[in-house]
Image (tube, protein in one colour):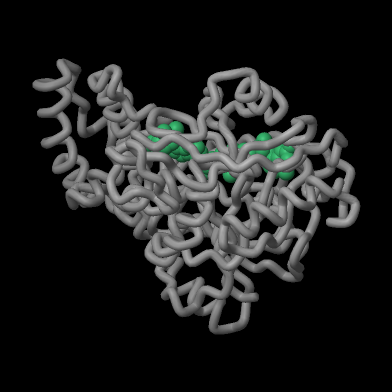
Length: 428
Ligand code: GDP
Ligand code: IMO
Ligand code: MG
């Protein structure tokens, strides 16, 4: 299996880090683990031998022996966050895997996070609930053709010109609209050039590197960040991130053609969570929601915010299957559902009295969607020790089978705990 995409099928935090680590550890010779969109807004958890690691900008393969990690052109890179994360690993005595960064990746400077936070404050009750990491402003500069790319850090003259161009516009906004102090060009140039020397040996044409690797039959794992419902085109706009975490975006963000992809795994929780603002039809505000939050440990890895919790939404699963062309699902956190007598699963929406079996066409309709539930029988047993499908209680097996049927994609594996080994392979 040379090219595999792992991506989020819901609103993020589905367990992509665990899925990546699991595949990297169980597939012989994973050669590359690649991030292709987003930045340090991601928070991916890996638990190996009981020890917990969280990656943000770095691919989860940074802990996989023998793998090379790649940050593709589609990622927005904060050099400060990059080295903070690498240094934190070194401090824990972990030798990070080799890392290659695309020369074309755009840079997040401190002014991007300043603008991110100021904009959110300005929006007040209409805020998106961003991570405040400067992701949106960095992508906005990219699309406005005012962005700074990694390659620019190695030529101070060009860098200065580009920072001047970017701040010309941004400073007008900061001083005249948001009533803030202007940002000094020199300070930004100094901030960014301070990382140049350490960064230089890591920088390469990563599209060429990855295509050559695929030509040579090497195995490349594309580790998605964020998720389908946070996609700027296919998600719950405007309550989304500013990139394309869907499978098509992976190709763009890596410089690899769609015909090279062999397998696309959607990671999906056995229930649903969301961080930040925006519609969420199956969201719970009762004891069940509190229990999912508590048992699932649903607190954000990057921002420490509580995640909103709700039941599994098969409409979203089918939508994610469609817009990503999923070949498999990895159903995570099934263990969290132990202890309910019956488990509601959303199979359709009621929108202003009309049943919708698929995602409605407009966001206005989606804001009005209320779930139509089917009820599946629950199980009481702790399943975190199960390692085969047959060891799962009958009703847990039935839940997996029903969810598979409703979601329209085969389930490759089921997560029964955070550890790499806490996985039940359903369809090898
Ligand atoms: P990501 O952003 O998609 O990588 O997911 P996060 O790391 O933000 O959140 C997923 C959380 O669920 C982490 O704390 C994982 O350790 C944990 N996790 C992943 N799979 C399972 C599972 O099958 N069961 C349980 N109980 N926890 C899991
Ligand atoms: P992983 O990779 C969950 C959400 C934010 C906010 C919206 C926009 O760990 O699944 P941004 O800072 O990207 O402009 O914020 O997107 N968001 C995530 N939610 N998991 C993530 O990443 C997220 N990355 C961004 O909470 O609602
Ligand atoms: Mg996360």
